[in-house]
Length: 185
Image (spheres, rainbow, N blue to C red):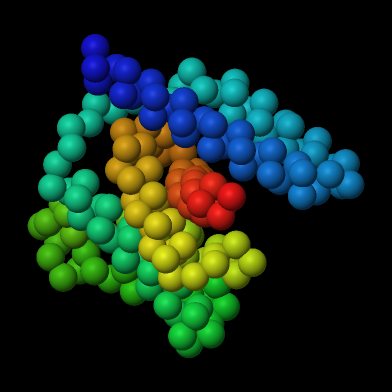
C-alpha cells in the first residue's frame, strides 16, 4: 500500500512539473497563436497517453545514491564550465554529456557505471539554466540536489518517454527558484 501511494505521489508530482513547464511556455509565448495551439495539441497527446505510462516497481539501492551524486556532479560541472571558462550553456552541457558517455567503457559489467551518463546529462540540463535565474553557486548546488532527488524518485515512472530528463531538471531549478524566493521574502 505504501509503495502504491509513493508511486502515485511521484506520478502526480511529475505531471505537475509537466503542467508547470507547459504553462511557462504559454506565458512566454502568449502573443504567438501557433505556439499556443501546438502546446495545447501536445498537452492533449500527453493526457491521452497517460494511461499507457509504464510504472516499474522500484526499491531504493546503492545505484540510486550514485544517480543522485552524479546528477549533482553534472549540474555543478556544467555550471563551472559556464562560470569559470565562460562556455555557452549548450556547449557546456554538451561537453559534460559527451565526457560522461565514455564512462561506461571503463567498466562495462557495472550497472552503476552504466547509469552515470544519464544522471550527469540530467544534471547538465539543470546546470545550463539561464544566468538570469541561476543566482550563484549555492543556487546551483541546491538545484543539483533537488534535480538528483527528483530523478531518483521518478526513476520508476515515464521510462522510455522523451523529455523526462529535461522535465526533471526543470523541476529542480523551479523548486530552487521557489526556495530562494521564499527565503528572500
